[in-house]
Length: 129
Image (tube, rainbow, N blue to C red; front, side, top):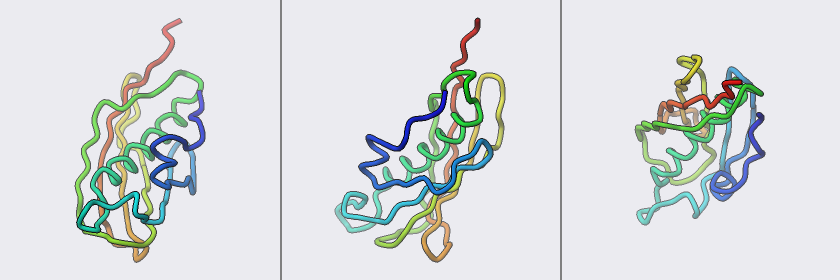
């Protein structure tokens, strides 16, 4: 099963797929008012959402027609405050197994400085047939 095009939360946050493959997914977004918390910096939930979106896409593409994936854990660290610019999140695999996957996602700003880093564990939901 292939993931649907970005919609819902991901679309509302302005996320765009730049590259999508079974071994790497890259998404980006231009910081907008929708991404900011009251102090004018990017909200941590935006980073968590980008991390989970990138990892989920990558995991789903790797699993392919064998089933679906659902996130079971998202651990994201915020490294640097950002107020504007283009953010890019890149997901790469740490572990891809029969029942679970673990993906690392690194988020950088438009100067290629790290702003957040996370890992997402996903459950593979496969048809036992």
